[in-house]
Image (cartoon, rainbow, N blue to C red; front, side):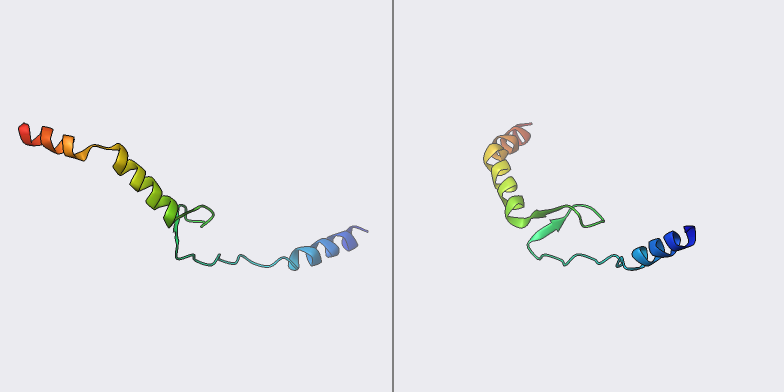
Length: 67
């Protein structure tokens, strides 16, 4: 009985395929080494554009120049 159970488990596990690396997407940035987390380039651009609108680099540069 145990041998049949073990043989069936070995057969089941042997049917599982190996790791397949996900396809690379040109419009994304990989966030981890396992490629499980990605950000789209459009989302990245939206974040940078929003940060530019919210920051006042001109004021920072003027303050630095005055000092």
